[in-house]
Length: 288
Ligand SMILES: [Fe+2]
Image (cartoon, rainbow, N blue to C red; front, side, top):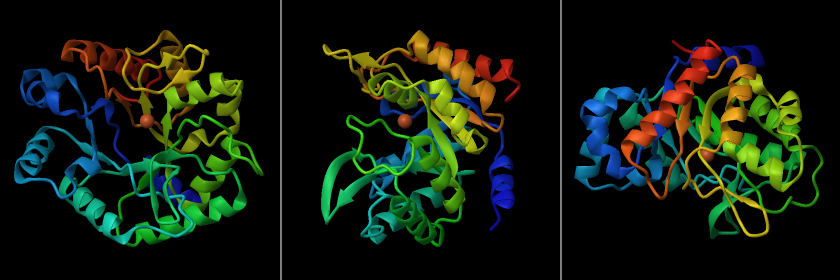
């Protein structure tokens, strides 16, 4: 498929607005009147694989009121040994159940030499890694037909042997695999501080035309001054400033997801943050 036609597929994705990552304690407010203030939901696909009936019923109930975007954690798209077919089949079932306009995974690996790493590990920015990811995505696309968008992750140490910058690597992977970009604004900001680069310059070199959706959440700082993506804080002003710039530059962005995982605040605080993200999208005319 040509680059132009797969860009067209991404641009045909409907506008979604301002959403949140679904977490269990928010099931009740989401399915009562408060839920009307949230535009769409991301669900962690892994939480609904081999799930008991009550969880599948919960998913169906959410899907009555919201567009649901499955977000997978453990497909290990960068593994040179290929894709785990059992996991892929389970993921395909969740995608089928939710019928989303697209789904997402991380540009990373979680399995190596038959071992589960238990976390998202960064790939070396090499042509070989681009080829591995493209070949894995070819296999994935033969099972899951919906468009896939890939997320940039944080990395503690830069992998050795890079042949290109992270921005070039993301551009090559997305164009060779016909994927969109889930731009995690907080991950970009954290990497820019921890590895001393300018996030605005990064955006100038990155394939912003492929951005479909954003992630954002607050960060914390450790005693050595390193930023940590613990998904447990209110959105910092530095992140709001970068969100503004990213939404301005990414003309095709369809939606934003607040990705709070720990120290869950009241649902009112979540609504305030999603309102602010929605208003940024309106300011730049990305949605109504
Ligand atoms: Fe994220």
